[in-house]
Amino acid sequence: MRGNAIINSKNAGNTGLQLLAATPDLHPPSLRRRPSAVPQRPPKMSSFSCWVLPAALLTLLCCPGSAEKAFEVYIWPEQVVVESSRSLEVNCSTNCAQPESGGLETSLTKTLLASQARWCQFLISDISQDTVLLCHFTCLGEQQSKNATISVYHPPKQVILKLQPTSVTIGNPFTIECSVPGVAPLESLTLTLLRGRETLYNQTFEGATVVPQEAVATLNVTAHREDGHHNFSCQAELDLRSRGGGIVRSISEPQVLEVYEPMQDNQMIIIVTVVSVLLFLFVTSVLLCFVFGQHWHQKRTGTYGVLAAWRRLPWAHQAQVA
Image (tube, rainbow, N blue to C red; front, side, top):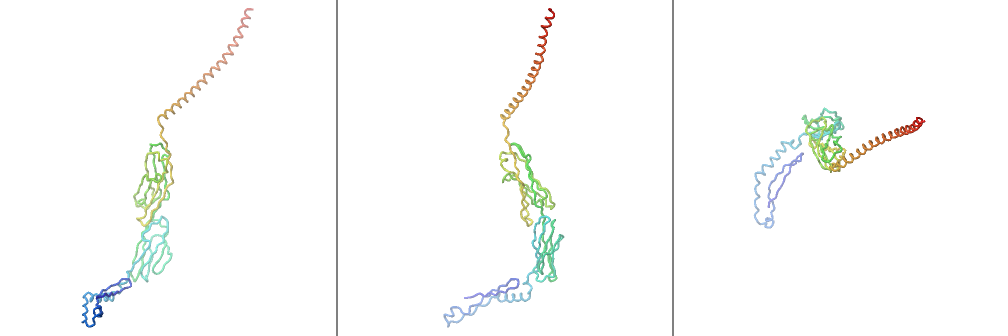
């Protein structure tokens, strides 16, 4: 029966060398039961076991520095998106036990918040443009550095929705317009036109410029009866996940569209007929008033003239006879 013996050699970096050697059991069960039996010769050690152990010991003695970690520099966060004119805290650190020097290089305004031998913390203020930060340390005459990328964005703070016109007859066209002023970057922006919870239209934009611009989405549609039963709105979504950020959303105030039923032909005929009758009655009444007024005036004037002439005739006749 043969057993296994494992030799572990561990260094400071938690790395080890395992050696496997096969050795005989000095007291096998067959010998204990039969003392008079001739003991067997132990098997020879393999050539692998003979040369691996000296090679491992030689490696540890000749290369003591191989167990130590390489000199490295770290920066946090490595990639981040920041709203324009905001501030950001940045940490620089190293695994060197006693670094000779270290710091952070940037073209922006920086303030040292705290520091120790192996790390330092800075506040980057008034971030107005995309930039790269450089964190560096020197250890035993060797200098190492690490970069961090900062991207600036302008969120869609104001989303404006317009319906033109605001009242429409079924079957007639109307326009939905959504605008977002001062947003960047446009390549990450999506405008969604909504009717209630239903998506009517999606528009994405192109352009990686950090200069804030106005984004506009327009949709021409035909009015339906159900359009008057839902609110219209516009959602702006700025997706910054590819730059190390999240999703920024903003939505407009809801707008209502007044929808009217189209007038039927018989209703139009009735309306035209009623208007025509009323107009005829009005004109007739005006003419009748004018005619009766003139007749009454002539009647008054004519009656007094005839009566006066009739009274004068007998007196004139009697005077002539006498």
